[in-house]
Image (cartoon, one colour):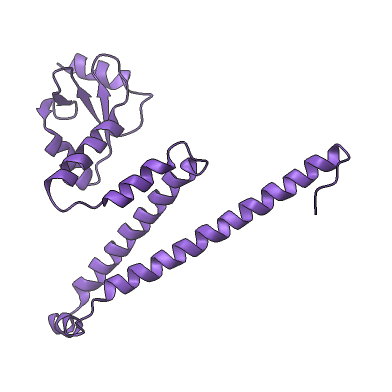
Length: 188
């Protein structure tokens, strides 16, 4: 058994760091770290615990991590209160093939990371608050969080607009430089 484990570990030496899980054709998931079969719920739990996970096809070695994570999201979306509205999903689909596609992944990732950091800070601060502060906070009636999110969204929109303007200026300058190389004058 130890020989097989060492071979599996060596086979994935070039793979991204993380807990390696093999996916077999029968849809079973095998956790190499614990030498046992696990479920999709177990993979979700590992993700919730911030454990880096890499899922590979048992036969080809192909990285299946993204498809497994998307499967977990799909199950979560179907099971309870979804995070993504139909409008959000439609807009995400529209970005595929668009010039902004490459930018969107990084943009969404940074915003989700910022949200996670805000949540962690809020949780830390709430642990330090005495219970009577929470009762006063609840007495405000109008939750503060929507206002915080609204402000954050507006700042994010402004940053995106500024970035688009900078990109347009850069393209304009590069076009002018290119035209000057050929002795052409840009339309003014």
